Amino acid sequence: MTSTSCYIRTRRYERAMAWLHIVSQSLLFRLLAAVVATNLIIWTYKNRIPRDFAHPSLPFVQPKNVTVTTEKPNNISKRILFYTSWFGKIPWPLNGPLKLPCPHKCSITYNKNELAFSNAVVFHDSDIDDPRSLKRISESLRRRAQQRWVYYTHENPHNVHNPAPFNGIFNWTVTYRSDSDIPRPYGHYNTLQHGERILNENNTINYAKGKDKLIAWAVSHCGTIRDKVAKKLHEFVPVTVIGKCSNLFNQVSPEVCRRGSPKCSSYLKRFKFYLAFENGMCIDYITEKYWITPFDNNMVPIVLGSNYDSKVAIPGSFINILDFPNMKVFSDYIKYLDKNDTAYNEYFSWKAKFKLDRTAEDRWLCRLCVDLFNDSLPKKVYTNFKAYWGLKSNCYRNKEKIQRILL
Ligand SMILES: *[C@@H]1O[C@H](CO)[C@@H](O)[C@H](O)[C@H]1NC(C)=O
Ligand SMILES: *[C@@H]1O[C@H](CO)[C@@H](O)[C@H](O)[C@H]1NC(C)=O
Ligand SMILES: *[C@@H]1O[C@H](CO)[C@@H](O)[C@H](O)[C@H]1NC(C)=O
Ligand SMILES: *[C@@H]1O[C@H](CO)[C@@H](O)[C@H](O)[C@H]1NC(C)=O
Ligand SMILES: *[C@@H]1O[C@H](CO)[C@@H](O)[C@H](O)[C@H]1NC(C)=O
Ligand SMILES: *[C@@H]1O[C@H](CO)[C@@H](O)[C@H](O)[C@H]1NC(C)=O
View 1 (cartoon, helix red, strand yellow):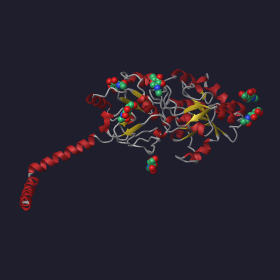
View 2: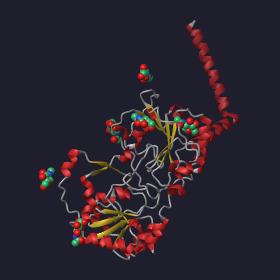
View 3: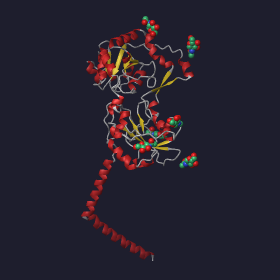
View 4: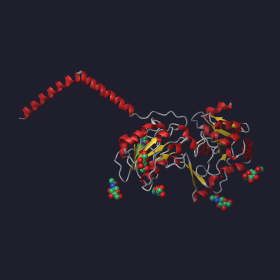
């Protein structure tokens, strides 16, 4: 009985194999295979990681360790889908933000198949290949009512997509603007705790000591209005220009400051002031030009901007050119500070009250996570994204003041 059925099965198997052989030789089958392969290639192409966005002002950051979990979200963990790459890279360079003390748990995924289950869907502006596709995805998905679509960028509106196609798409924004739903500033400061204040109480460091140079400016993106301001300043006091734009000032960029050179830092420490001019005059746009380079090298930042208030910058830590009536008066003040160490050191007295917070850039993800758990946050849609993130509503600030300083 068993041997018979086994025999029959063997015969069937042979017949099946012969049939398969004939089919696989047939023209129709080959045609079919070709069609399937072509579709597979097209599908792969369509679903490819968005192309790298060649970008002048942001350095590439090596992606760091990120925990990626695949379990379904539940009421103790929210799911965050990073829908785009980050300058072509997956995973995003999240510097362990979920390892910061974060009161809630969220898991991260890069798998678009989890779109429907995710509590938040994050898009990096520079990696959105086709802004119009978002509306199509949004409509075809019938988005879950509680799902938040999140717009993310470090850039100012000069360097992002035209905001119009994003109308009615995003629920939240993550930008440097302090009124973003989830602010991600380039830097932040905290008030010192009582104990820390005692330690700094009798701070008698002379920050002018060992500084034999006046003003440094590291700049590699020339052609904006700040060049004119720096040139004008250079007519009154020496400005040492480091980087690609030094030739515009008939200078040669100092050899010690070749890209990535650690010696550059000790060179910068010889300067009393640093031009922390941003490449766009946009609300709240204050970058590492203020937060990192001058403070790391004990230089006083000279800024050229509007709202350097206590919300976005450290009180007493900088000099704003736009507070002066003209360049002559400003440069006289710089010369005065150069001669009077006591007055110069007053620009460091903030250190007795405040400290830099280097975790500001990384905290946004925890904040997003916490907000996803906050059921009292209302529904929100950016129906007119341009009103929030358009060039005109953000940038070209202080035009008249800058013109005045250039006279
Ligand atoms: C990533 O993190 C895990 C756990 O914290 C650790 O064991 C692993 O070595 C890390 N990998 C890298 C490449 O840092
Ligand atoms: C969700 O929360 C409720 C009450 O807090 C709890 O009873 C339930 O087990 C939780 N479900 C999951 C999947 O964690
Ligand atoms: C700071 O100076 C004051 C007055 O000279 C002195 O009483 C105080 O003990 C000093 N504090 C520290 C932490 O050295
Ligand atoms: C130097 O600066 C200090 C502090 O601002 C001021 O009190 C002093 O009068 C200045 N000295 C001169 C010579 O201007
Ligand atoms: C939740 O959102 C409400 C409304 O904005 C806010 O007042 C509250 O502080 C938030 N709760 C937490 C835990 O962040
Ligand atoms: C998010 O935005 C969409 C509009 O695209 C809207 O339908 C939805 O209600 C919003 N969700 C929340 C939680 O605000």
